[in-house]
Amino acid sequence: MKLYVYADESGTFDKAHNDIFVYGGVILMETENRNDATRRYVAIEKAIRERGSNHPDGTELKAAFMSLKERKTVFTSIARKGCRQFAVIVDQKKLYDQIYESKKRKQRFLDYALKRGIKEAIVRSIADEGLKRSDIDAISVVVDEHSSSTSGKYNLEESINEELRCGMFNPEWNVFFEPVFSTDMPKIPVAYADSKSVPLVRAADVTANWAFMAERDKDTYPHAYEMLSRRSYLLRLP
Image (cartoon, rainbow, N blue to C red; front, side, top):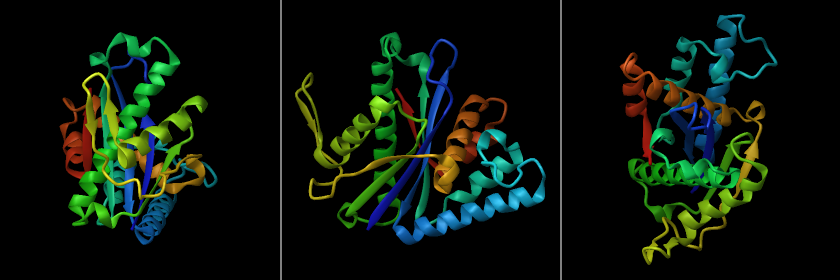
């Protein structure tokens, strides 16, 4: 069985002016579920366009341009059996200032946050779908093309493969963290795509946007956070 992961971000990774940063995404179990989710998502977008004139044909229907009602409709329509949502919520106030001292350090942390979120979501998805880890024989990851610097794209792929296929060694603690899968699994490719051309990247955009809004407004709009918690796998960092 092959797993498909799609991810996008919401917010700005800038501690001086922003409190939170979010990755959001969807995981699909098997090609059939991926194709079904793609068709459903396109149908949802079509219905939104037909109900109003704020989203003309030919323009990308991004979460930032949707009304709250439209985002709620889309967010609550994504997950079902074989299709799961996840989010990584980063509390930037708790991060060390040194992380922001260079683009390389910032990208290293962002890669870490995304791979942790993907790992957590995959492990929980497999368990909730009643599968064994040995049932998974391939994984692919697609990330919105704006979610990584050019120099960071190879590093993210390498990091995800170490986390999931090879295992991670921490020399400071002299500890080896076992991989989720074995090295017999083919190398996991990480592709970068324009969300305009990939519906499930847009689904990841809506998930990330909803997670950002729900975390930011959880005191004034607690229902949004309750929906997020019920429908998505959440990982909070640090």
